[in-house]
Every structure is written in structure tokens, then in C-alpha cells.
Figure (cartoon, rainbow, N blue to C red):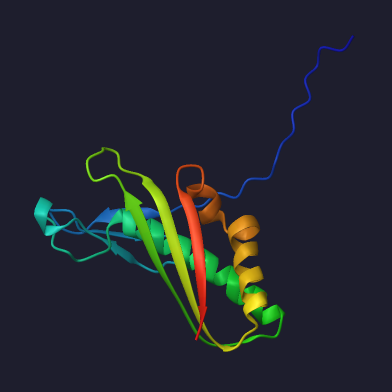
Length: 151
């Protein structure tokens, strides 16, 4: 009988961001490998200066951006012409809990162009269920739903 354990190694991709404090309050600037700066700040209620997005807003923006890239890539491969593309995202959090993760998130996709509604829905489904890493990250703690309007 062999007591050796088989260890399966999976390839890992490491992502690194750096965050630096900009002022003596809550204004920070972050950048990843792209080098593009992103500003974060706290609300004026806590002494921030409202000079950047809130961290939880960035989570919703990341979800929208991740899915948008997927959907555009899929629709381009299907030779759909996209003239306009917009997503609005609403996230619900407990008003009296700490921490307060998102409990539900709703995305509404607005697309305009020569786009088949069936192909657009399929592209969104593929993004939400297969490709979007942000969805995979948020889904264990939040119910994520979407709807679509072809303009």
C-alpha cells in the first residue's frame, strides 16, 4: 500500500495593486499593473474629501467592467454591431451591520445597435455563469441578477 499523497498544482496568476495615501485624511490613490491611477476617498461624514470612489462602489464598478468586457468580446465574435453599451448596477447592503457585504446585486444592461436580443442575453449569461471572475468572487455572498434593454 502506497501512503504517498498526490498533490495537484494549479497555475496561479498573481495580481498586485499598490495603494498610497494622498492626504492626511482618507484620500488614496491605487494602481495595478496597468499603471492607471484610481482614486479612493471616504465620505465627508467621516472626514473624507469626496475625491474618489468608495471601496464598495469599486466592487460594483469592477463587476460591471468585468462583465462588459466579456459581453463586448462575445458580441464582437458574433458580428453584432454595438453602437452604445451601458450598465447600471445596484447593490443592497445591510444598513446596520458591520461589515456590510452586498446581499443582492442587480445589473441592467442597455445595448444599442444591430444586436440580436437572443445573442445579447446569451452573451450576458455566459459572462455571469462562466467568464466573469468578479461575478464568481461576489456570488457566494450576494444574489446577482440582471436584465437587458435593447435600445
